[in-house]
Structures are given as C-alpha cells and as structure tokens.
Image 1 (tube, one colour):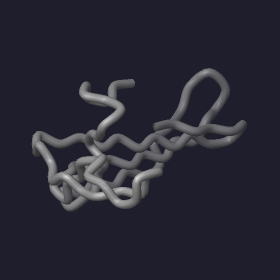
Image 2: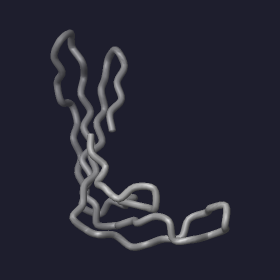
Image 3: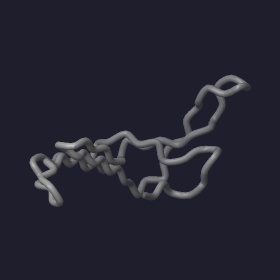
Image 4: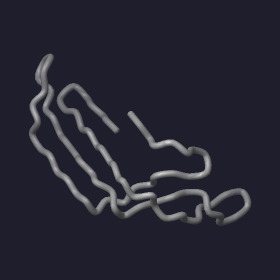
Length: 81
C-alpha cells in the first residue's frame, strides 16, 4: 500500500508464509467463517521525502509480529501489488 503528496511518500508492505487461522466475520447470515488472519506477518513501513524527480528514505521500521488478513471467501489468491 502506498500514499503520497507533494512532500512525502509512505509505503506499507505486509507479507507472510503462514496459512492463517479461519475467523468469523459479520455477514448477512450472522457471524460465519469468512476470512483468514495471521499474527505472524512481516511488516515494513518506509517514509520517503520527495525532492523533485527523486526521493530520500528518511525512516524505515520493520516488525515480525504483524497482524494481517490473508484470505477469505471472496478471494483465494495472494494479494499482490
């Protein structure tokens, strides 16, 4: 996921090799197993300052304890950029 304005750009990348845990989610039929989540995700957050046609990395953080929604009833493939 990315976002930017005239001065900055932020990038958030979440990945995992974990197959996840089925979870119940609200639906028209009440709570049913619709999604898969993991708490074993890897997250990278980067903040860049934009300077004309190039950018400079000013901050990066990483975590291996990230919660990610990794699947569900309406999709079966990994989320890709």
